[in-house]
Length: 488
Image (tube, rainbow, N blue to C red; front, side, top):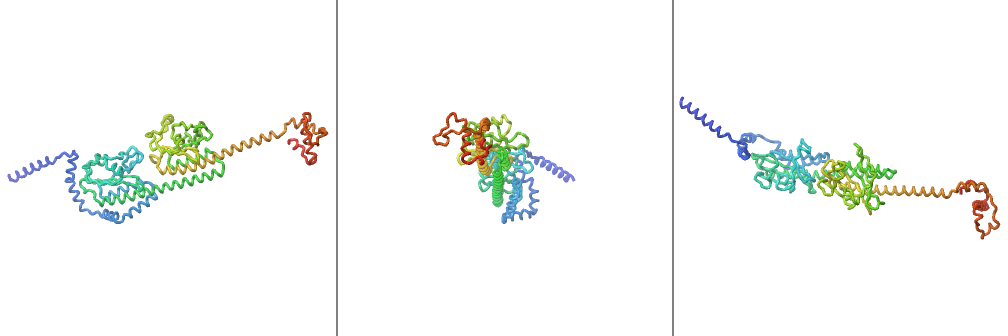
């Protein structure tokens, strides 16, 4: 009995001692990483017996029939332009297929040369986490910089990425990062997959799946952008053609024409405001009439300013375009030395991006058109510039015929004035008519029918009566309308 009691006591003491030894401080990152495989070994063993037929089936289709997924992707892109949602779904599919521990989607901001984490549920600016696209930072920033895939077995042991994956991930070890690059070489997004230390590193099969899917996604995004660009181009051409037909069919006020053109250009390019400058060809220096939108809420009519702008010495973007004749696309206004901020300090309007283009005829510049602040993007893209070029061609045509109409109108008014003046000069004075009426007959000079007769100063007041006598002798008195003859 004593032995049994003593044995139980020793066992209890030993157990207590082991309990004290196992009370390890796990606040240290390295400690947690070392003990993590042993802490979760039971859960891993239990999960090893589970069957995952859905993973095997999906892997089969990805490895052997990649077109099954990508056909749906292409059809989705042809009907829906929410690319961010599509990329989130693609990232989730790759996470499930590669059995990754987590996935992060980074969107590329080409204007600021940064990438930011895209959150599915939070799309506001205040929730963005930005990283500069460069070397010596996180994995995703490096991949966006190189535009090449990267597979790392141990991220903490790689000196190329001092910031690791960019967030608190003590158990993250293996990382597979793949860029989504369009065929024209633009990096649109980056998908980052990672596994913990209890999982095996990514292999070549995982890399192959990611490359195939992201390659098709990049091609689909490029095709979708081309489709949207062609669609906007067609809409712009149709609208401007209809506007041109309407303008040629009847005389339209230039304010109304410019309002319609700028209004549609704003909606097509997604701009916040628009301004139209018409060069005054009669001015000695480079002066222009300015048409701007009203300041009222919801007012879109373009109003002509009373004061002309001297673009020859003006420091604005419109003045620069008018002098150089070249298009200017400012992506970040306050970081561009060409942008002049004095006007904004007076008006309070904040300019983020500007697209300004000259309207050129055969031999000179007719005007300048400018749109400000891209609404659905950071800045105006090259496709916006191409649309704007088409827009400027129609504007040049409209301005050319506007000036022709103005010249014709001016010429008509001058001719009308000259005709009135001529009629006034041809019509005799009322005093002369009264004098002629009272004395319609005179004594004909004796040598009036001779060739050598000449009007003497004494006979000059009788000239109207003498002319009437000559006409009467030729055509007969019954053929003459006396009242009309008086006015003649």
